[in-house]
Every structure is written in C-alpha cells, then in structure tokens.
Image (cartoon, rainbow, N blue to C red):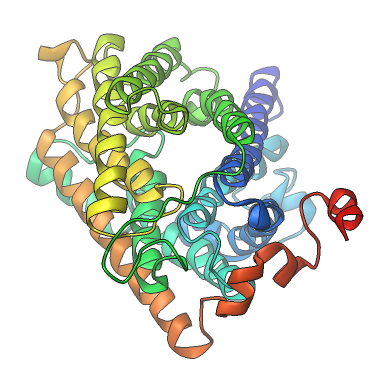
Length: 408
C-alpha cells in the first residue's frame, strides 16, 4: 500500500543516502590534501572509481548476501508494485542505496592508508571482493542477525551486540583491513632511512585536507541520524551525540596534537567514528567524553604508528577508523549504561566480544585478500612509477596541467 508516511520514509532514507554519498567527496579531498602533489589526481580518481566498483559489487552480490534479497527480478517486483517481498514505493531500493554508501566507505578508508604506492587495478579488484563478499558477511551478522551470532550473544550476555551506525561494522572493519594492506605494501620510498630515521613527507594542501574533513563532518549527520531508516525511529539524540562527539574529537586532538591542523581536522572525524555505535543510547555528555578520548587516541596512535613502529599509513586510517572504531564499539557498552546517563539496553561484554571479533575478522581479511593479490599480480607500483607519481604513471596527467605544460 502506498501511503504518505511510507513516501516520507523513502525520501528520508534517500536524503541520508545522498548525504553519505557526498561524504565520499570528503574522503577524496582529505586524501588529496594529505598526499604529495604528484599523487593528487590519483586520489580523486581512485575514490570515484572505487565507488563505481562498490556499487556493482554491492547491488549484484553484497546486498543479497547480507539481507537475502536479490535485484535479479522485474522492475515491478523490486519497486514493490508486484508481489515479491520488496517494500512498496521502492523503499528497499533506497535502503540498498543508503547501505551501499556505507559499504563503499570500506575501500575509501583503505585508499588513504595505501596511498602513493599502490597499483590501481589490483586495488579495484580488492574493492570488488571486499564490498561484494567480506564486508556484507559481517554486515549481515550484525545488522540482519545472520548465522545466529547475535542470538548467541543475546543468550550469553543478555543483550546482542549494538552498533547503531557502524563504529565497528564500517569503520573498525575498514581500518583493520587497511592495516593488513599497509603492512603488506610496505612504506613509501624515502619515508624511512636505512638506519631507521623518519623522513618527513609534508601534505600537499592543508585547505584541501580541511575541505575533506568538513565534507565528511556534514555528511556524517546523514550517516548517523538517518541510520534510523524511518521518520518514526529518528531521534534528535543521535544528532546531539554526534555533534558533541565531534567537538570532543576536535578539542582532544587540538590539545594532544599541539595545534597541528592535520590532527585537528582528523580529530573531528575520530570523534564521529567513535560515536557511531552508541549514538542512539548515550547521553550527550558521555558522547563528549567518547570524542575527547577518540581525538586524543588518534594523535597518540598515529604518532606511535608512524615514528616508532614505522608503519607508513599515509592518512592514519588504522588509528582513525580501526582504533577509534574499536574504542567506539566498546564505549557504547560503557556510556550507554543507565548508570552513566545512557538509555541502557547494552552489554559491555557483548560490545567487547563483538568489537574484538569484528576487528580480528577484518585484519585477517585484509591480510588474506591483499596477500593473495600481492602473490598473484602484485599490489605495489614500480620504483620508477612511484618516483614520478601515480598521476603521471597511471593517469598520464597532473593536478595542474596548464601550469605544468607552461613549465616545459
């Protein structure tokens, strides 16, 4: 039955999908501003083509794997006009679009970690495999109760694992897969000397980096608030929690990062990553604390990762998404409790088990997928191509063609 209420829900979820889709522009500009000038074009092209590959993989395979509905049917069926198990007015279709934008965040996250030395087409193959198979397997476990794992946690710990908007399902999974890829790729040429000294590689553009952060922050309110997937279930609590966590992340990164603009703009994202899981159950003051911890954690872990462990994660996607997503999953079980002002209905043990399990699954997936690609076709650019940059080596054009032509 077509109703104004259902039509409003279709529009609500569609707007959410568009907002999260716009976040991919934020991923692109965040990476563009962070990498060197000779790799800016590649950053922009990679995010866009990754989204295209993700769309095909998710619509053809991933959505069906997670939710049991395939789009290999007539337009009348999938639009909900004819019988076939699809919701009226194309509601299932806009839900799939909305969830696709989440799935496509996985390769967008990975892209920042492997920037400036990863081969182009092997990464597209990895995108198809991850978004078509490995991500929807975990997504379906958490958000569709597949394989009975959520039922087991509810029976064992009293409450199932809670991840309202993807601190773990999207961010921790993306970040931990990225760690596996980064470790297999190795550091960029010239990043570390043979005697272990760290060589600075400055970002190409702080304004582009800042624009990427702003685009992500704005779109995140679609990411979190519209995870309710209906007007009836929407609550302003999610918006307030997202806002306070973002502010906490900014201030935490500002202080711990000693005013560094890269840390400040990523600190906002760290807070938003961490609040996703419990944004519907925590008190805003609890979300502020979660954000403060996340912003501080990102700066500390990024510095440790780059300088002490010599892991060349270019945008710091493992600290930002992997570790802050892990923190957010566990923090939901702490600050979601009624004793700390939350709404309750969460279990700390469920959050610990679900978060650690998801992170381990993602890390092993990253090692497996990128390990096979490395052994079969190679995942790293040649030293010559890396030296001239991905823009010229892969796309045959630089970020400022007119200016570069005039130089010659």
